[in-house]
Figure (cartoon, rainbow, N blue to C red):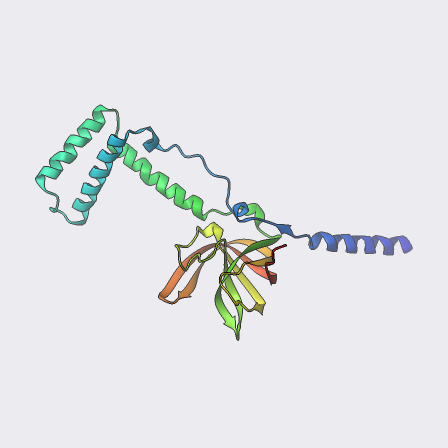
Length: 219
């Protein structure tokens, strides 16, 4: 009986200690390994890139407003396409590759690290309040730098964490870093951030039900 009691206590203590283990992570840890991209534009000369830019600009203008491109410009497009073809540059193929690369880069910016799902973590960042209970914020966006989403375009979705903290935390400054601790989830969300000049929809790649939030102090 005593051995059973000891075994129970041993398992309880050590299971509890493992459950409480918290891993400190950095913002870079939220970004998956980069996918190597074969960029066809790296093989082109500056003149070839300029020719492609002209072709795309004129084509776009013609699509948006048919008849707006002068006959002389249409002739120039044709001449540039022939010149590029003679140099071994397939205009249609390379523009299609550019579109595919753009989509891939966008997808990579939204990708998350699935192995972090359910992990107890601690990380440093800046809080942007979304919802309040009295003076205390209960929902936030955690972002990696001061002014993100306010004074600058929002970071990629995998660099924003939606924080829910039912206990509430009073944000005295948007420019003061804080520690946030809790269970991280890989959950794609879109949140409304209300700014002085209107509302902005922010794409988020992670969420956390926070257990603790406290102000960062330099050692």
